[in-house]
Image (cartoon, rainbow, N blue to C red; front, side, top):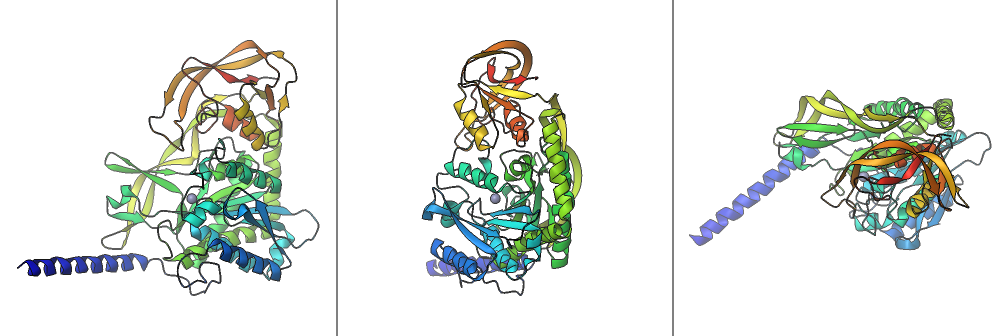
Length: 505
Ligand SMILES: [Zn+2]
């Protein structure tokens, strides 16, 4: 009897596994690999992932055969002691756009790197684009995470959530590298996890091959926000249509009571999409359906990544002036410094039909009229006139250092100085109960008042009318969701007068 029971349980288990496998295969049938065979570091292996030595020797081999390709080993505090940065340039003179493509800032998103390796092969022998642009490719921004198959860096930070507080020295290095190139166009490739608790509870998983994440942050000049939609998203969409890949705008999912809500777009200056745009680049983040899939559909994910990258390069090649104009207009707007500052905002609520996959039937399922909070449609909650400058008290050494990392020019007072300024007093204060990236974030509301303040030597004046002036606004206004106060680069409490002030002339 016992053995009969055991056999029964054993057979049931096998049947369950087989049906799970069959169901998995039916879902996977939506995501067939392309016919093309990729000769990239991981896909040219029969299984497993390429290791450091293989990746570097692959890059060295490619650089050796291609006169347009240069491999730079940028010294970095990571495994191997450097980050590989590739540049494609035909060496010709003339006004050229600079393009920045980046992958694997989250180490567990291998198709982003693999797609950029495939792009390197596509650029070999097709140098037409190089007449209009120099193309910089950082295939693995987070080397330690990549080699460990982990999202976070070697020191345990999410590097895409560290572009304002700079807790990890690798973040500082990445920012320095980015500003050294100072690109006109920047795209950061990621993968997203199609299996989320909020969805699986409802028998659903994500469907779209590609999600676009342009920034809606109001501190990003409007000409850049428009150029992203017209000249990055639009050409990528047509290319994906042609190649048979599905796409949507990026979203995260929240359960709100019985309803599912989508949070669409990016509003945080710590995410690359916004951070790179604040430097004056036409920039977005792209997500490929892939986290947790290992090598399943890796060729498809690689191809989708490369398809988006090539579509963008084609658009740059066809319409270089559209990019030049957007960048120039944005720069002028920042240097004029007249647009008001949005200190706090929320996303407009809209309704959209969204497609998912039903895990039981393995069919597509459209959820009609879903609640969507669209960060591309920000609604201002608190607007202030743009100041001529901010003044940071000498005690704020970390904030001063972070502003330098963000490429801002500072005037440091060499002796004490009295100035009439507008100061902030904290009228509402809360601290997150849980740790996030090793800190408890602070959220404040403030009121402003005029006063005369004596600033000690070492205090910093940050003029807003400078090329990177948008960063000053995005990180120094105290209410901003991912500014220095929120991230505790500046610590505060209820009733405090903040050590950052506004200067009107
Ligand atoms: Zn990511």
